[in-house]
Length: 122
Ligand SMILES: [Mn+2]
Figure 1 (spheres, protein in one colour):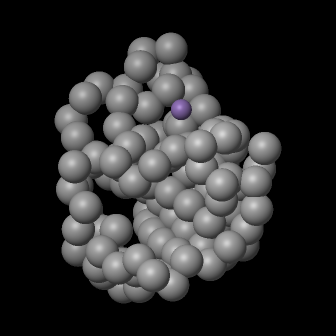
Figure 2 (figure 1 turned 135 degrees about the vertical axis):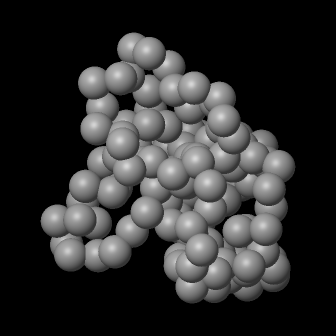
């Protein structure tokens, strides 16, 4: 399950769509999910996002959660259930934040409620 930050901007929508298209090309089953009901910015209406779900898919507990363009967990939205219940959470974030030491390296955090692999490109 691919997620991005609420009130998405262009890099959020572009990131989730690019990952979806890449996974489709690899023959992988994936779904895009965005928390909330806020409309998408009109300037990105050219993006083929008809498959973007605004409600969690029934089988989300069986899916790896991949977050893109979410500098921290709260940006996914207040519904933390997927973060806790997903079997694996991957966070792919492009923004460098000097206050977060894990932003420039790749590590696996086994301490969280779900196993997490954090990857960052700075
Ligand atoms: Mn963004």
